[in-house]
Image (tube, rainbow, N blue to C red; front, side):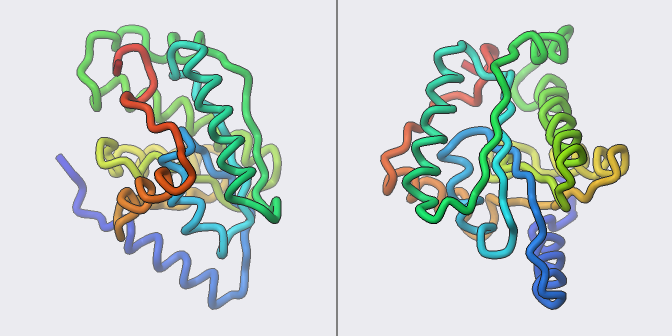
Amino acid sequence: MRSSINYQSVFEKELEKLKLEGLTPKLLLHACCAPCSSSVIEFLRDNFDITIYFFNPNIYPEKEYVRRLTEFEKFLKDFDKKNKIGFIHEEYSPLEFAACAKGYEEEKEGTGRCSKCFDLRLSKTAGKAKELNFDYFTTTLTVSPHKNAEVINSTGINLSETYGIKFLVSDFKKKNGFKRSIELSAEYGLYRQNYCGCEFSI
């Protein structure tokens, strides 16, 4: 069941508040891949001091992880000519995903295994944001029409309380966010993968 909460509206109110206060907060943006992240970065870059956080132990196999990471680095180099956007990536750690997915291997895409995966990646993001003194953390995951924004935002809000750092609520697929990501992917010649990332989604 989808939530009745309009996360895009909540996001816009937060953005308006920051503009009125004249603030440009530091944002740690968890990113799953270059194509999905492209429109999100474009949308956020004028209002936040962005650092990308590439932590995706769910990606399978390793050569796919390397390809997506390399594609992201190439995209940022082409897109961010002024080098304003930071980039942090973790080493490939598939055992972390295997541990969180244990017992959920047979579930359908979009159910419990995905929720566990969101929690894993956002927990790591929140911890890193706290460690490095960011003002906010969030994720590009809501730009996908295949991802449940309710689950992602609920996870982020809960982690915000646990780690004591603000989660930027979002639904980046709205306002043609997903469509724009397709346009930017074509413009920058980005590799668009045909599965989410884990071996179960292939």
